[in-house]
Length: 112
Length: 112
Image 1 (cartoon, each protein chain N blue to C red):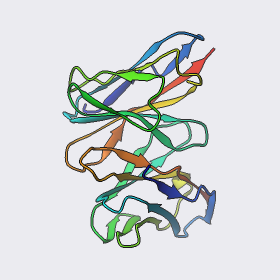
Image 2 (cartoon, rainbow over the protein chains, first blue to last red):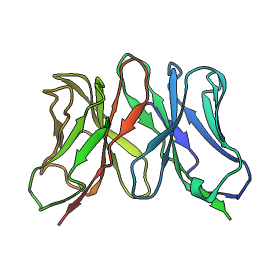
Image 3 (tube, chains in turn blue, yellow):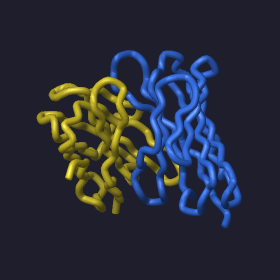
Image 4 (cartoon, chains in turn blue, yellow):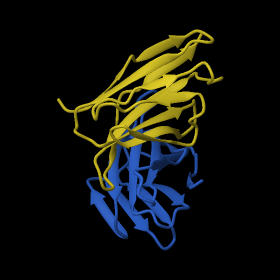
C-alpha cells in the first residue's frame, strides 16, 4: 500500500510567524501533489497543487516539491489565527488510475 | 453554482440496516471518490470511479458498495456487513489527468 506520511502535530506557531508543514510519500512515480486545509467538523478545501520540482507560491502559501527525496512541504507566511486547522497532504498515485491518497494531517495552531 | 452535493448532512442508522449516502456533482468531472474519516484520523479511501459504469475498491471497501450509472452521481451504500460505520463520509470529484479533487460538505453517519 502506497503511503503518505505527515507529522500529526499539533504544530504551534505565534501569529505572524512562518508555519512549515511537511509530507513524505512512498510512490516514486507520483506526479501530482495537493495540500488541503480542513477546519474541525468541515470538509477539506484545496489550498495548493504542485506538479513540478521547486517552489510554487500563492499569496501567503508556498508549496515545495522534491521528487528525488519524495518530499513535499507547505509554508504559510505571516500565520494568522484563522489558519488554525488540520492540513492534509494528498498524492495522486501512479499507475493510470485517478487514486488520491491522503496523509493523516498536521494540526496547526496559530497563537495570537 | 457548480459543486458537489452530499445528502443527507446527518444520518442515523440502526444496527443491521443498509443506508445509502447520496453524492451528486455538476462539475462535469469524470472521477469520483468516497472517503471515510474517523475522529482525529486522516481520510481513508473506500471506493473510486474514473468513468461511468466502472469503479475500483479503495483501501477499506469491505461492508460498502457503490454504483456509477451516471457521470453526475456516485451513491455509497453502507451495508449491515460494515461493523463500525459511525464516521464522517466525504465524497469528492476530479477532472481527468492529474487534476485536483474537490469535496462535498460530508455526511455524518451515526449508528444508534
